[in-house]
Image 1 (tube, rainbow, N blue to C red):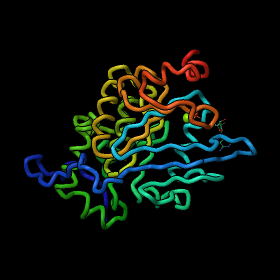
Image 2: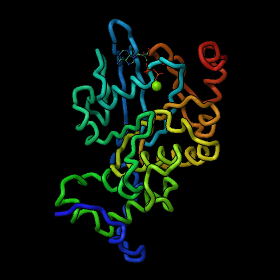
Image 3: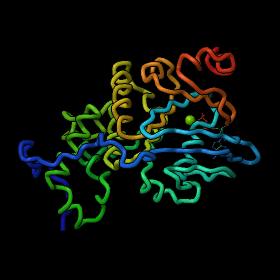
Image 4: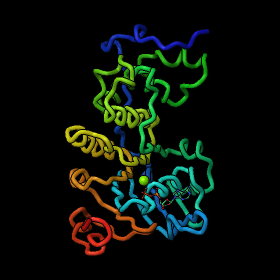
Length: 273
Ligand code: ADP
Ligand code: MG
């Protein structure tokens, strides 16, 4: 049996029904809620994250900033199970992620985007979306599952959201760096996480792409919790949500953009340079 993906088999847009609402409100009041408590990890005695506590509310968009080496990426690594904490807890909707293997954390509703976009350059944008659908693996399944009208409609809705609707038939390798970042965000959205972790998603983006991404993140956070690591303060101002500043593996400051920018400790170690 041939599982080849064929754009010509797609149904016309008019025949599509049952578009899933990707912005649905959380099912429970705690959906997407993350509580990190005294989280610590040591690498050869060096504490990359050091007794860090942090709470992200359902449907909150939280920005994490801080100098290089502050522990931002390591923090995301521990939330998604890539790195195991030495001590402390990562409670997601009340379950301790620190005890779960990576694939189970994904299944529990946590999506992670790494710093460098990893998309399949030789596949079309549509195919990239298609293979990231939950249950998309397995030959038989792909033949019968993929071409259903509602699946196509769902992919088109996500493509719209991440500004790639008119690029669906083209190879992902032809996209700009920023568009690849969007594609990867869209691929994660198809898995419908309730917590999305994004490590420097606007790196390498043009100013216009950054603006669009700020709007995209605000829209995504209407239906799920989002943690974004970012360096670019202009972008952070555009998102204008609560900011946590990390320094040497700890929370240095937390508040609105204006509050952390006015915090002398933040100016001293980060923004003053
Ligand atoms: P950030 O993302 O804030 O720039 P990272 O979380 O990548 O910082 O790194 C925090 C610190 O932990 C750095 O000093 C880094 O070198 C160190 N580190 C991160 N991962 C590892 C690892 N697997 N082994 C050893 N040191 C690491
Ligand atoms: Mg990093």
